[in-house]
Length: 311
Picture (spheres, rainbow, N blue to C red):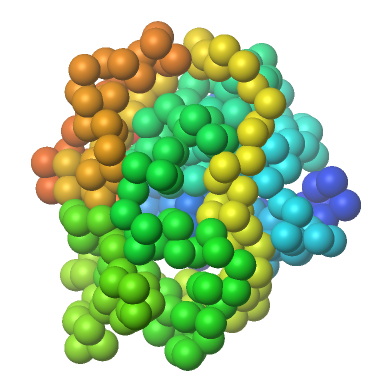
C-alpha cells in the first residue's frame, strides 16, 4: 500500500484525488461505487501493477479527497463519464482498460459507448450493462422501502445518516450491502435501522479499512454522493441504441443483492445483456457478494489479470 502514489490532478476545474501505482505501457483505470472510494481497489491496483500494468484509481467528484462540483445537486452520470475522459487527457493516457464497480460501472459503460476509441476493454463488477435513465433500473418494479428509492428522496438519507457519526454510517452500509437480500425498510423504519449495532464487520473488512473510509467520508460528506448515484439514476443520458464493442468481462457474485432486482438474473444468465455487449464474458462467483473485489480479492485479481493479458 505504501508504494501507491497520491496526487491531485486538475480536471474540468476540479481537483481530483488520484492514486497510482505501476509504470506499464497499458493503463487500468478503476472506477469506484458507493459507499466506496479509490481505496476499495487497493488489492486490485497492487496486483495489476505487479503484473506490468499502470493502475490508476481516483475519488469521483464530491467523494473522498476530490473537490465537490460547484452545484452538487445538479451532478449526473454524464458529468462522471466526461470526468473519466478528461482525467485520461490530464494524465496523457490515450487508451485504458476501465474497471467499474457498482455505479462506477455506469461511467464505464457510458465512456465505452460514447468514446470507444479511448477504451481497451471493460470489466464491471456487480452491475451488468445498464445506462442510467428511466429504462435502466426500473425503480417502479422495486419495493417502495428499497434503499435506492429512499435515498433518491431529497433529505431522507441526510436525516437518516445524521443520527450517527460517519464511521457508523459506513459500517452499517457495508454490513447491509453484504447481504444477499434486498435492503427494504418498512414505512416507519429508516435504512440505517436495518442493521443491529452489535453486528460485526465482515471478516475481510477490518477496523483499519473502516477507518480509512470514515476519514475520507468525514472529509467529503455525502452531499454529492447521494446525488450521484441515487438522485440522478432516472435522468436520461441522451444515449440511443447503446452498444459496447470493446472486449468485456462481467464479474458477478451470486450472493450479490443486485441479483434480486426484477429480471436481472435472466438478463445475465440468458445472455440478453450480450445484445448490448456482444464481446462480453460473464463469470459468476458462487460466494461473491456486492463487495466481491474486497471480499475475494485473489480470485477477482486472477479474473482481471486473465482478461487484461488476453486483450
